[in-house]
Length: 530
Ligand code: NAD
Image (cartoon, rainbow, N blue to C red; front, side, top):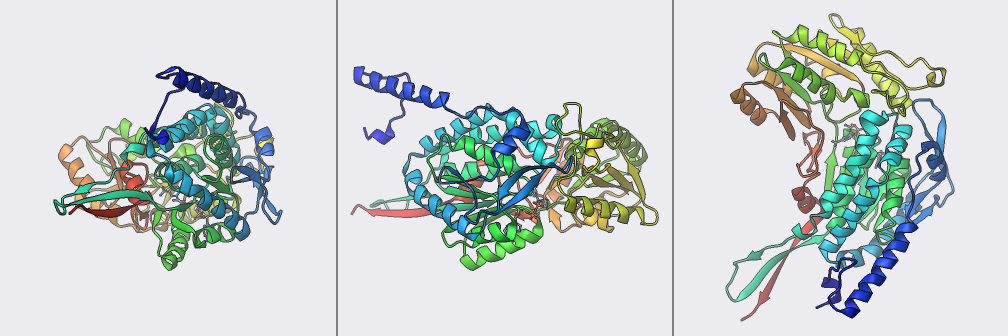
């Protein structure tokens, strides 16, 4: 048997020799485990420890230029760390390390790569609390309702993809009985992954887990607003992965993300972010003729029919609008089309529910809603609220109370707003706000509401609330969106293809098919036996 085809478990061994070898491996593993990073539950302390670090070739490194930029706690405005200002030279170093590591990584059996990824998942699971706290500190997302949940799903994604190594199958093709014709799924090479700040851990995992299992190496560019938790996750994983397989850069879009997409040795780009940046990334990739996955913005409709279970729909509206994430979600149910027969009751109950949510310290277990990510986003969101307020006929239902503590005086808190009295042509219903602002739009005619829901440049997600199965089925077929649900509003789930149509993006993530379609290419091989 070839040595690389053997998968011994640490304690099993067939003969004496095999047994002692296995025990040595087990002892080595125990020593490694004892030396592993331990969770640091004080996020301020951890942020300081992560200061001025990126991860290239398995080593913590500052930027070649030595430049840094500040990372702030948006709930208080205080600086919590400095991050390296990655530029083209750092990109070149990271890509070179990824390129060097990729050949050996791809040469390992796929199941072995999968096992390492699943092991990363298990290790990340030990750091859920630590990572959750760090995400809460750097993004302002509440720990209990958002950040801890995100950290636990991160581990789940690695365990899920870790199990898919043996699914990287090719085919045999009945081309000619005298020839053996088959296809292989081969990795693409170095993958450049660019992520946003709103769900930094999960969105990174959805890119790197399938890329790595498929035998690619990766260079991640984190969002400038939230580089720390992603860096910590990379450090944790780099205890297991070979150096250079997973590199992580911090920096700004044009200076660091741009050179990453443009680098000649990056053979695939996977991007999550805004439509505007997605266009720039797509253009650069087009020049290089490399494949691209784009997960972009959304303006997701939620259609509530006359016969819907109203309480369920309202609970779904709270989850769907991601009020606990300050509405900073690409799938936020930011256009709620509610049948006129239940419109007023819906608005009243929804407002009461959101009113009861506590806005405040993201790290406090009692907090439901934290702060907006940045001053720039704050200006943008409050600008839309002003616009809505100045619209004749529009009513702004403002919910929840602002935190009162003096330390949050400079915090970027925005009270959630539910607008009524506007229609689907209003900018609030057409443009992605990416904040806690939704519009409840009254409707009467089923055909008209389907047309209005589809009258958007976006097509990411949609939900339908009804007990009429025929209508539900009809609506799910006709809604122009990549992720459509009836009577529920789940977020992305490992195993279910997720992604948008129209300006919401290109390609799908989170599933087996997305790994095969986006991180491998097919090679056809013909062996002439005649
Ligand atoms: P953004 O487009 O401003 O930034 C996203 C990332 O791109 C960041 O890392 C940024 O540094 C980088 N970037 C910026 N300019 C670049 C350039 N010229 N070249 C390469 N990289 C560049 O988006 P954001 O404000 O961070 O995130 C919010 C957006 O992300 C919203 O539009 C939201 O809908 C979208 N989003 C989509 C999904 C999805 O799954 N479809 C999920 C989350 C967020």
